Image (cartoon, rainbow, N blue to C red; front, side):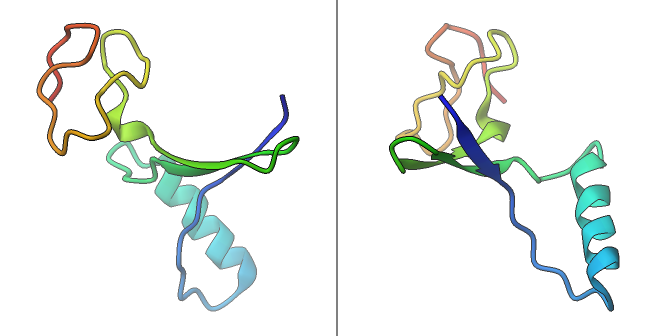
Length: 81
């Protein structure tokens, strides 16, 4: 499968290169909230949004119930902050 993965940020930078630099700096910060990605399947056109801040720290899979607003346990059984 081929995917187009995008992350979006609004920027009020004075130039295009400074906007790109701001985006890169934001993504690289240890406390960055740049964790939400739009993923488009290039073959089917299907688009999904993934918030990777919700990855389970134990199994590293997206197993947290997306319908639960503030989950406390992953489906693998690990506690989630």
